Length: 124
Image 1 (cartoon, rainbow, N blue to C red):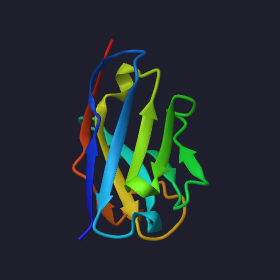
Image 2 (cartoon, rainbow, N blue to C red; image 1 turned 30 degrees about the horizontal axis):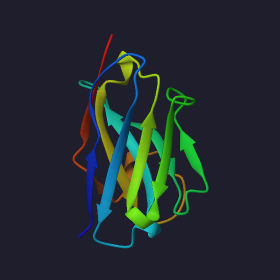
Image 3 (cartoon, rainbow, N blue to C red; image 1 turned 120 degrees about the vertical axis):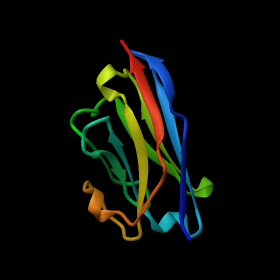
């Protein structure tokens, strides 16, 4: 059984920073491609960032490019999302997801496992 647990969300003012973490347990973390998604109230879940097994390749949505950075530490079974220059429109529930095949995946349907989410709220 694979489990993903996100943490690091919270309330922050516009322009501030947060770092989200997602710890994966249950199987060999280094064999999972990972992604971050977010869902605002009344909206569909959307892609934020993705990273390959080794961390050698990443992808970020245009809306967060230059502000957010995905990374991973396979020794700690953890994937991170560093979020800088936060905007009110970044307010959402943020999810991490795992795919048991290498690559960059931007669609929710591509992922096998999901966490419960961590709330990020950015005030004006």
